[in-house]
Image 1 (cartoon, rainbow, N blue to C red):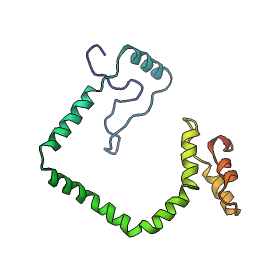
Image 2 (tube, helix red, strand yellow):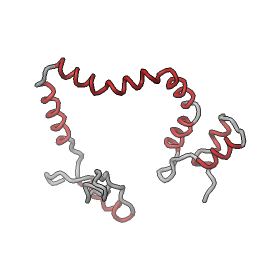
Image 3 (cartoon, rainbow, N blue to C red):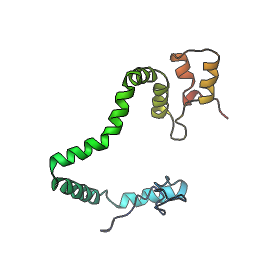
Length: 152
């Protein structure tokens, strides 16, 4: 904006770190602050040139290394994950397939179809239904979605 880079005006960006020293990603502004941020956005343009420059810098660093050594480094970094997968892949495949038809499916749908304020399934309702012996199926799946949760 006016030749200067401006942080996202729709997000609180006054702090780089939270009280525990972790990176603070910022929360979306609300109310008048959000409205002011939207007005400010209209006056500027999105410019990703700083990001592009950092990516070019990283690519240049990798370009100036031995390719086989770089691949060996990546393989060593991946090795613990690969070893864990190889130790557990038989039951992990079965679990993943089952989970994608039950909990993961419910969670993905809730996140995708829920509102910005509520993207979680009814966990208590889910536990109650399972405790009563109800099996996973469309009825249970639909009942625990955010749009069907009882209001507190």
